Each structure stands twice: as C-alpha cells, then as structure tokens.
Image 1 (cartoon, helix red, strand yellow):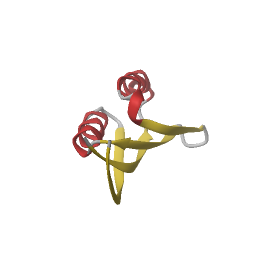
Image 2 (tube, helix red, strand yellow; image 1 turned 180 degrees about the vertical axis):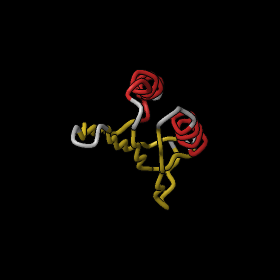
Image 3 (cartoon, helix red, strand yellow; image 1 turned 90 degrees about the vertical axis):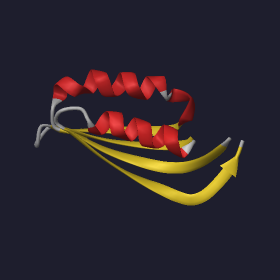
Image 4 (cartoon, helix red, strand yellow; image 1 turned 180 degrees about the horizontal axis):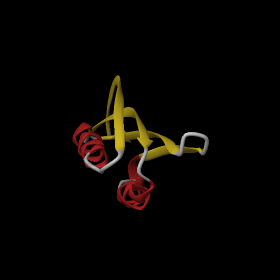
Length: 85
C-alpha cells in the first residue's frame, strides 16, 4: 500500500464540531503521526495540526469529512515522497 506524509491544518470556529472532529481523528488514529491543538481563547477558535502517514485517499477522505462540518475549515499539504508499506 502506497502512503504519503501530509499535514492537515484545521480551524474550528464552531465548538459544537469538536466532538465530531475528535471522533473522525480517532477513527484514523493508526495513520496519525502527531497532533497539536491550540485553543485561541482571544478569538474563540481552536487551531489543530495533524501530521499523517497514510494512503492519499484516506487523507483526502478525512480532510473532506472534516471540511464538511459546519464552522470548520481545513487545508492539507502533501509531501512529494511516496512510500510502500
């Protein structure tokens, strides 16, 4: 299975979406290298960065599901390096 390393940046403006995001991340936990969450109280938002090593379709599907949540924005940057596992 060919995998890629990617970094997903998530901005959460709707705190009601946090549980759904956590559930989606938990479902894909086997692919997550690391995660950093920053609550920015001054602006009332949360900033989350996720480093992943997964098949590209898995990364894209997760990004799409998270991006479809109300009040949530997501962007994903991919490494150009592919690996076979």
